[in-house]
Structure formats: C-alpha cells, structure tokens
Length: 245
Image (cartoon, rainbow, N blue to C red; front, side, top):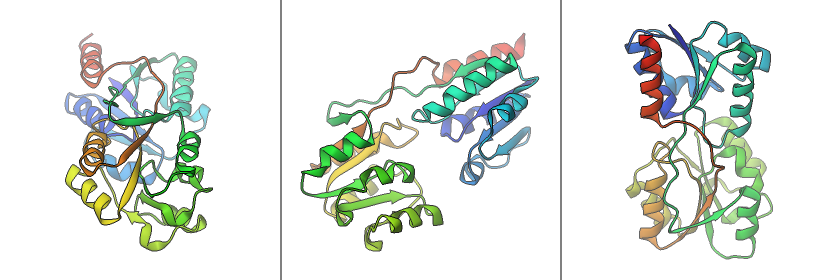
C-alpha cells in the first residue's frame, strides 16, 4: 500500500517513517532542499523535492491509498492545492493539524501586516521568528530595531541584507530552540518584542512563550485560521486501519 505525505514538518517526517516501518510505501513531497535534508533517508520512503505544479501533484497521487497533508499550519495555499489535487486524482485526503497553543500571555494579530502596524509606533528591539518569507512585511520599520532569526542560508542572509538589517542583528540558526536559549538571546540583544507564529510544540512555540514571559517582554503572535482535521495520533490510527483493510 502506498501513501503520499505532503510534508516539511516534524509530524510529516515522523508519520512517514512510522508508515514505512509498518510496511507501507511512502512518497514524501517537500518544497525545498532544506525540507529534504530534514526528512533524511529512510527505507521505503521516496522523496520528491521542489514546488510541484497542480498537474504534478495530481500525477504523484495516482494509485495512492491516501494523501496526508502534513504541511505547515500557515501554508494555507499549499493545503488548498493539495486538497484540489486529491479531488482530481480521486484519492482520500487527510489533513493532519496541530493543536492550538495557549495564548493567554500573548498579543494576537491577524497577519504580519497587522504585527508591523502594532510595532511601528512602539519603542524597543524586535526579535522576528516568523521566517524569512514574512520578513519583508516589516520593511517599513527601522531596520536597526529588527533582530531576525532565520535559517543559515544564503537566501535568508540576502533578504536581510536587502532590507538593510545590520549584520550584527542577524541570528542565522536552525531551530527549534530551548526556552533557555530563547531567553538568553532575548537578554543578550535587549529584546522588547518577540514576534512568532503559532507553530505549536513541534515548532518550539511553548519555549518561545515561556522565554518571553520569563524575560518580561511582549509576545506578539500571528494567529492562524481554524482548520478541520485530525491529530497526529488520529491520523496514524486511520492509516493503520487502511493498511489492515
């Protein structure tokens, strides 16, 4: 039996390896070379790397027992196209969703534009942990205030340079990070605001929230839309039942 997993997340990697270990053939689709490296090599798993056109997604799905959409909770466009491809291929679609995090100590905004607007008239340094793709949303802020934490890639560094962010402000690191390291960076760089997405536990969000609270700074979170789907365990159980049919 073959499954297709659209991944690039911790859950996608874990599930694909579990299914393979149970005897399934698994095709894992990731959007980037970084995603492929994170997936790693595993017996029974074929990795498809790079953005796929809609017809390519449909072609990959042909003959699969089911498709598990384990893409990032903020990758809404990708989720939409994967679901459409499943409909076109006549393949069962399963959305694996992350539970929402506790936001009781956070300021929650709708998107990065609203986050930038919130920060514009406030003083203090800003630790940006939303990823390089969202970095340009903060281009109207004083670049000397911005302390982006981005992947250690040439692309990430180039975006920071294009925005005029001083080299000494850039944290080129691969997460997720512990609470201790988050708190140390906040204190080292005298941060006043930490901007994050709700990446849940797999994305290290609790450690960011705890560090921000311990340091007494404002945690600004880009909210995510509510999604219908299954938890990791529910998805795993469903796949197991399909394999036993």
